[in-house]
Structures are given as C-alpha cells and as structure tokens.
Image (cartoon, rainbow, N blue to C red; front, side, top):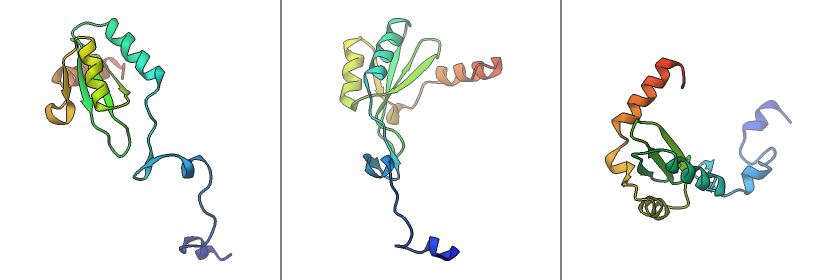
Length: 122
C-alpha cells in the first residue's frame, strides 16, 4: 500500500472497537448518568446549605447535567437521566432549579473558582 493510499476514501481499515459500536452523538460518545452520579448529588446536597440547581442541556460532548451550587459558590456537576429528572430531583429536595441555558451560572460560582485558583486549589 502506498503512503497516500491511506488517505483515500474507502481504502484502508475501518474503525473497529467500542467507539464504532457505542451510541454516539455527533462525533463524540456520550456517557449516560449512573447510580454513582446520582448518589453523589444526593450526598453533596445533604452536606451543604443554600444549594441551587442549574440544569444544563445536552450538548455534543455531554448529556444533560445538573450543576449544584452552594451558598459559598462551591459546586459540583454530574450527568443526569433527563431535564425533567433534574428538576424533579431539585423539587424533592426543596432546591430552587433553573435552566442554565436561560439564566447562566451564578457569579458566586465564578468567584469561588477564582478564589480557589489564587489559593492553588483548582
């Protein structure tokens, strides 16, 4: 095989392995939420106060995520099964929830990240 044959359409080997067979979104694979993600969210909420939820829509690189932000700006983000599930999770825990695509993320989260970066924590 000549060196340039590798770049011609239809020649060479086809992609093999899990990436070929996995569910794909655009050009990337998306990992679904699992019980570890959901348990993390429950634990995180129970250990903090003043938590608000920001539901982030599905993108080309990730599924629906729930961003939880505490009163001091500390935050966590995990994949969730759906937008409805995220809002229901927040409602059950009496946590205000917002659509992040509409309201954005809170300034206190950006301030927290800046503080941690200056401290060398991020």
